[in-house]
Each structure stands twice: as C-alpha cells, then as structure tokens.
Length: 227
Image (cartoon, rainbow, N blue to C red):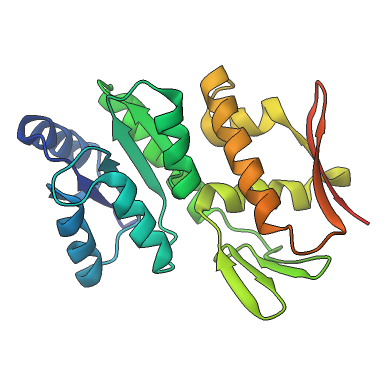
C-alpha cells in the first residue's frame, strides 16, 4: 500500500482551514493544519512533510518570512502559496524567495489538489540521470544540489525541474509552451511571468561561470549554452 503524502497546511482563517483540511483528508492526504508560520516551523522541527501549503497573510510569521527561513535552513520541500492578493508583484515576490507555486483565493479544492499532485509528481520522478556537469558547476538532480568549487546551494523543486529540462533536452533548448504545460499545467500569461522569475534565478545561480548563459529564443523559449 502506498504511503499517503503528508501536507503541512498553514492557514489562520478557522473556517477555511477546517474545510480545506477536511477536503484534503478526503482526497487521501495526511494533513497537519497550523495557524501561523511560527507553528509551521515548529511542526517541521518535529516531523517530515512532503509539501507545504501556506497562506501569505498570517499573524506572528507571514508566508513570505516562513519560506525565506525554510530555504535558509536548506529545506527544499515544495511550497504552494495561497493569497487573496491580486498584484502580480506580490506573487512574483513569493517565487523570488523560494515558493514553487501559487494559488489565488478563493480557490477550488480541485485546483489546489491538482497543484499539490503536480509538485509531488515532480519531486518523486525517478531518473537514471541525476548527476550533471555544467562548466565548473556540478548538479545533483536527486536533491537539487548545485555545487560550484565545493560550495553548494539547493534549488527549489521547481527551479531544479527547469534546470533538469535544460540539461536533458536536445541542444539545451527549452520550449516555453512545453515547460509551462509540463510543470504548471497551462501556458497562461501569469504562469509565463512565473517562469520568467525562475529563469532569472537560474541565471544568477549560474553566474559564477562566465561560459554559461541562458538566452531567450524569440518565439521558442530559452537555450542553455556552455562554451
């Protein structure tokens, strides 16, 4: 019997929290619901979770700070942000600090479950090709570790999946439409903006080796070049 995925759910609204927790349990997940970021960090000190779903606006410790602190500790668990905020800048800020996906409130439980399953699928995908050399960088796809001259950084699940697609696609070419459909499920304008943030982050992570570049290919997507 397969192990049930375990979700850390952080939501301060008691009605929404109770309803969403109940629906996630009915969908076959294990769920621990806490009401603020501090409780979320405490739960992570005592248990192992497969994914976190966190509201942005919370008392004591907001979603942005929760993610930032988690990533600083080296925890690369997939994280979905929830928020009623409608400004694109607020959403892109979440991706910049380490979120893997974003769901706008109000949301349908079917949409949330689909996003959770997509990230869990990315996390659990098996491959015989886990170790790669990119110029002076070494990349281990199993744990999303990018190493340069003995110093490691750990990419988020989404960043790691994008880099892996660059490394395994012919000639390092990444179709914008295909990666959006594969990792996000649709190629909407909003998801395209999210992809742009992840590409920018990868460029910064790879900037120490001047032989590596990610270029835009008009009408196609992107290409990873190592000279």
